[in-house]
Length: 269
Image (tube, rainbow, N blue to C red; front, side, top):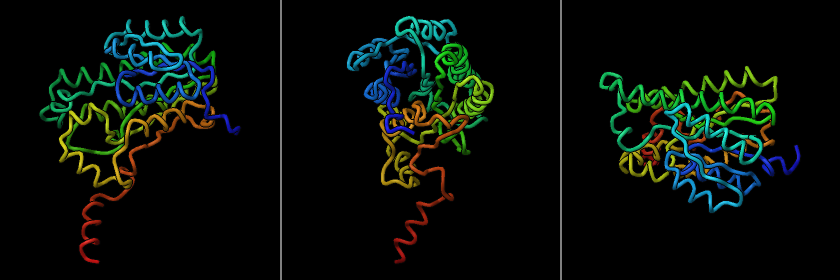
């Protein structure tokens, strides 16, 4: 492996949800490593403003609930930059109102379930489908943002977590189907990440509960997730495909109730 394998010089990357915390941090890092970046978001004006702060980037509209919008995004990106090397499927239906209403299955509104799957699963599938011919030509790759909730049971976010679990299986299916043509597909599973949207959606008490179960001394920032995504998108990860990289500060890696164990042994020393 060369020392420059982490670089992305000349590569073209689409980052969906590029106007948000993790999306922009990822686009910013890829641009710093030499990539031409497309920040795609339903908040297109914000995406364009942020793209203007990067060396060679554009902001484009994206509505993951609209098939034509997704296909137009990929076409516009390839038309503008001439190729496509990386698709980072990061956008998802997740905001304060959605989070408040996405609880357990017994209280689940069918409309919320359908909207979540339409955006998160169907939208990601269409984006992958549209990008794959271009990625095959460039021997490029896909990195999907999932969640550590897709790997664990919880009493909240049943629609969101199960949609992300579906994307994990989609990741493996694409890796298996398209690996022989040179296309890799991986996923990054963040834990609770301190984005502006998360600060608004989750009260401090719940954030503290997750922080106490994290093996680091703090929750992750968008830049932490961006590092994981940019690594998988680079040639440094050329032998990695079909994998889920859990980037949650160790929250999903330990026995339940570690916070209580810490408190017990601290009090009885």
